[in-house]
Image (cartoon, rainbow, N blue to C red; front, side, top):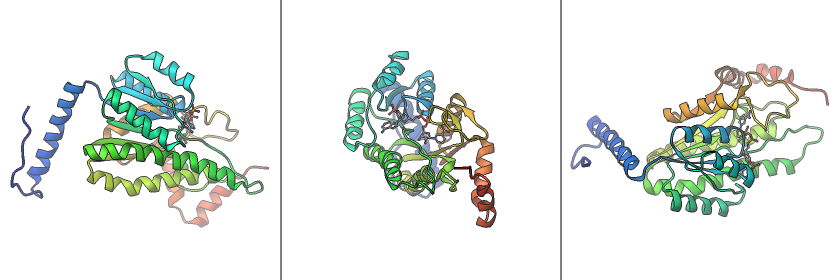
Length: 284
Ligand SMILES: NC(=O)c1ccc[n+]([C@@H]2O[C@H](COP(=O)([O-])OP(=O)(O)OC[C@H]3O[C@@H](n4cnc5c(N)ncnc54)[C@H](OP(=O)(O)O)[C@@H]3O)[C@@H](O)[C@H]2O)c1
C-alpha cells in the first residue's frame, strides 16, 4: 500500500488536512491487517465499569489487557475469553509496576491503541470527623495512581504519534456536594489535568478523553445509604463509554439527566447552588 507524501504542499491548505486524515485511515487499515486486532489496556477492570467495558471491547474483537489488584478476579475475567482478555495484576499506586506492565503488554501483545483508566476508590467525609489522612490516601489512589498510569502510557504513544487515552473521573468533580468533598476533589483534579493535557497530546497525535459518569450500580455504590438519582446499570454505562470513545469527543458524560442536573448546579451562582446542596445534608 502506498501512502501519499505531501512534498511542498502548504500545511494550511485544507487538502493537506484531508490527505492526512486519508493517510491515517490507510495506516489504521494497514495496522489492522498486519498486527491483527486493536489492543486496549484497562485499569480497574476486576469489577464495575472497567470490567463491563473490557467485556464489551472483547465482544467487539479487541485484545484487552486488564489490570487491578485482585489476581483471582482478573484470572476469572481472562478465563471467560482466553483468546482476547489477558490479566496484568498491579497496584496503580506503584509507578514502577505500571511502567513494567506497559512494557510487558507491548512486548507480548503489541502497541496499546486505547488505555482506559477506571481504577479508583471512594470515601465520604464529615466536617465533624474530618480526616486529612483519608484525603491523602484517596488523592494517592485516584489522582497520583492515575497520573502514574498516564505517565506510563503517554511516552510510548507520543513516540508513536498515535493512541487514545480515557480517564474515568465523575460528575462529582463539577461541584462539591456534602459528604462528597474528598472524592469530588480527586475527580475535579483529574478533570483539570485532562483539560490541560488534551491540547498538548492532540499536538502529539494522541487523543485524551475524560469520562464523567453519574451514578452507576457497581460494588462502589452498592453500600451507599443515600438516594442515587438516575442510577444506571454497568452495561448501560459501558455502552455509553464505547459510544463516547468512538466519537473521540473530549468529555463522555452520562446519563443525560445527571449531566444536565450537575452542569446546571455547577453553573448557578453560589447563593442558589449552596441553597440546593444545603438540602442534601443528612443527620449525623
Ligand atoms: N459507580 C459510580 O457511580 C461511579 C460514578 C462516577 C465515577 N465512577 C468512577 O468509576 C471508576 C470505577 O468505579 P466502579 O464504580 O466501577 O467501582 P468498582 O467496581 O469498585 O471498581 C473499582 C476498580 O478499581 C480497582 N482498584 C481500586 N484500587 C486499586 C489500586 N490501588 N490499584 C489497581 N486497581 C485498583 C478495583 O480493583 P481491585 O480492588 O481488584 O484492585 C476495581 O477494579 C472509579 O474511578 C470511580 O470513581 C464511578
